[in-house]
Length: 101
Image (cartoon, rainbow, N blue to C red; front, side, top):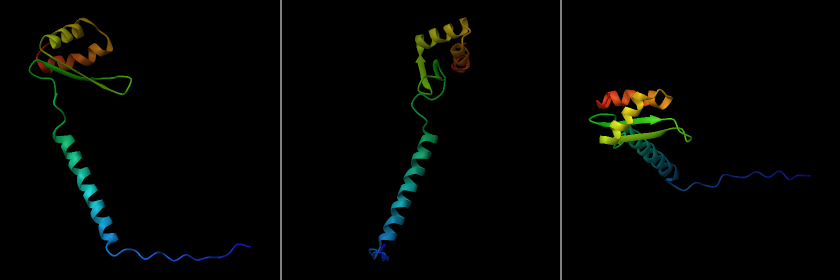
């Protein structure tokens, strides 16, 4: 026959709820700052402009960033406008933005 045992809550440390609330508040603030940082500073590449082409293309891991400047960007754009594959069609708008069309 099982014994009926009642357990009493252990007395909490004074201020433990306050410490938990402060910890949660700090975590929320850190997450908010990280979110703002990613929105306001998207990365060093930015968009396609001034002779540089930046395109996000599909890849086996979801997406890959394709970034070229100068002669490599011109060669990439020349290839994109002379071919009709799926990647070429994705690259063309970025070439137009960069002024390489």
